[in-house]
Image (tube, rainbow, N blue to C red; front, side, top):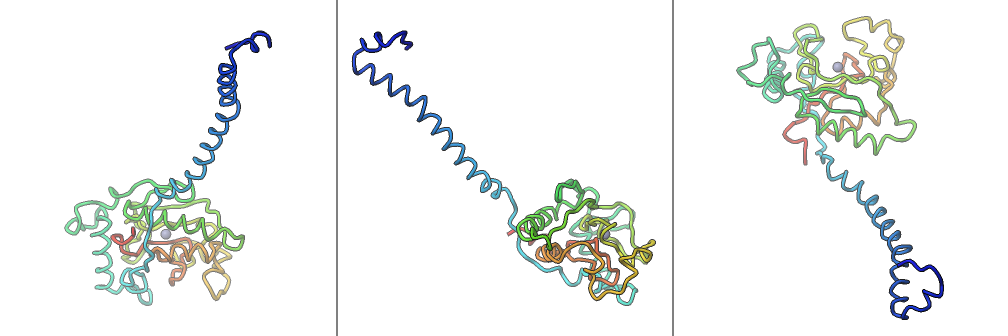
Length: 252
Ligand SMILES: [Zn+2]
């Protein structure tokens, strides 16, 4: 109700003036307060809403029979141990094209690959390990923020469609259960190629961490959820993590 003068306002009954004053207060003071409170409540609630969408993973160790030192001794494949690990991988993650494994699983590892993100980088991995990878990322975000623990990946690789290991081994990249982080900063000193020329490989070290830019904190986070760091292996493949836990036990 517009009032052109104080005279008009004063002529109104006292009850009408009271109601108009209350309505005016609601518009000027109470309503903005309600909007502010609602905004604050939403801001407080959002992180917990986001958290409920995150996975809760079990901590688990890599399964020993899947670890490379179990089926490769002194550079040679141990026949039955290797065959057992391959049977498990095919049964759980799909067959590799051209290797005659369809009797163990009618689904190919390639068809089980899905796109996901790891620290903002798009990668393709076997869909079964996506929750484990997300739990690793979340743990790193919470626990590896100090300068000595932090690491910022620039290039991450996941599934591959052709084998990259000599001597009859089948790379876990073919199953989509391995990722490589920044090969230029985390070398594989005994892999195929010119790695020996890499200064990080030429020096004598007591720990694989002296060759890698990756931090203990990062490796610990992968360890926590059943990934195996090949930096500890005789290959000294410091860029490489592979999920060797039980895929049925990833989620709590
Ligand atoms: Zn790799």
